[in-house]
Length: 371
Image (cartoon, rainbow, N blue to C red; front, side, top):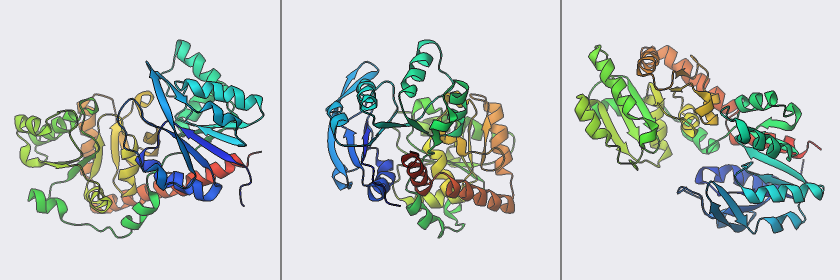
């Protein structure tokens, strides 16, 4: 069914990973897009001009933790029927746009993280007021939706949008994946291999991975670990590994942007370990059949943790607890090849069911046609 409603998507920036879903939206719904020019921290963006429906860039002005998008308010007066916003209370211009659009009888839909579970006091009140201004809310995970229901937000206006990478491209790579000797060729052994993929930063507590490897070694269990990512924070994992006497078990691969290589490494690893927040790394790993282990303090997690089903597609350990993390790792590296194959199948099922672009398009279509 063709969509006859004119839709406008206004977002703080266009992250590189969201090009596939934005492109699919542009093709399916003929939407117009407006992106902010920058955010607090550097974020890799796609080429906006390559996106069908791109109509302009908005200037983001920062005031402490808040920001204002100049040029955004005038969009409220354009002939759009539906507006999609990031659903960020920190975006001051979005408050005014919401009020103006609603006064004009236009629908406003948030594409939002929603509730984390750590909101309290004034922040809790402000977020409830902010979300009440939207006609519908597209929330990244079910965990947040449940929390928002408890806050009195109507379940009928909330839809789980999940999140996705380039799921079609990853599927093309996945169907060609087979077990390989990539880790045996590098390490010269057949030990189970742990993988971490993402930027190497101190707050991610990647030193805990090395502590886990050292602890397992002291107990007579040998494992390898590979880090895919750039050290952007002078963490010095090589130095830490040397101090712990496990440097021969550590492969600092560095940054990698070849999805075929990344897919092979995830597919052949025993598990993906993320001591800090997991985010899209969980979707990346599961897309290539790799279980994910991360901390279980959900109020301080990213929404993609919802793709992890304990004992099926991964596990959660007590945040900051090296002993519990090591036990969870030990459980996964001890699985035999049949169990590992079942895990791959469950990981693929999770991604194919929900964490993909086609699922997101169905949800957006449902939301647009809700009225």
